[in-house]
Length: 113
Length: 113
Image 1 (cartoon, rainbow over the protein chains, first blue to last red):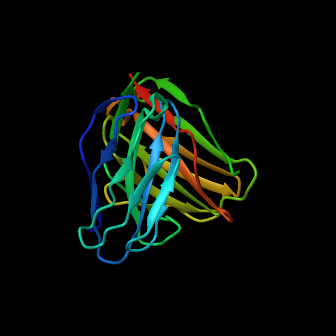
Image 2: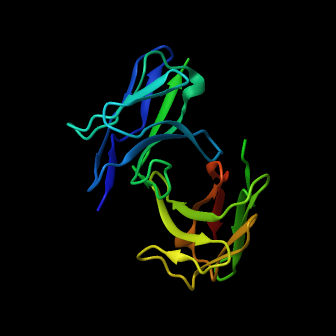
């Protein structure tokens, strides 16, 4: 079945450092790919998404490119802030609205001042 | 934007008792509700999907008699954990589908002692 694998955390960075969180997937069809963020004590929020190969999703300085050839959707940010400290989840869905999501295990990011 | 109010946010209960978690869509009609659980440092796992007025569809391995889901109206869905045990301690979160898309609740941290 479909699955998502993320790099293990926690990831600890200093403010203004570059961030990459790896995400790879396996899917039988052509899924849509998502990144969700969960701030401490809160529910999940959609951060960005891409619905087809070579699409780039971007939001709040984060971006991720749908790479079909490597089945990847790595999350990147050039300069992280303390407020970016959260858990990040990569997910896929066989429909582009994200109906039935399959999540990766989550990667905790901690940004120190 | 669309808001899903989930209550309680935290609950501690004694082993053997039942706990009810509510998710209300505040400004839209939720035709479908997804219920997830998240173990510490693990991903979110879909437990069940419910459509308003219909019986819930449970994922493989989820006991329907233990996790009772009711979706009797377009603005309210409930998950009841019956005869809770310490291994049921987890983070439970709902996700509602409305005309404008999908919205997560803020989650419920259940601790069974």
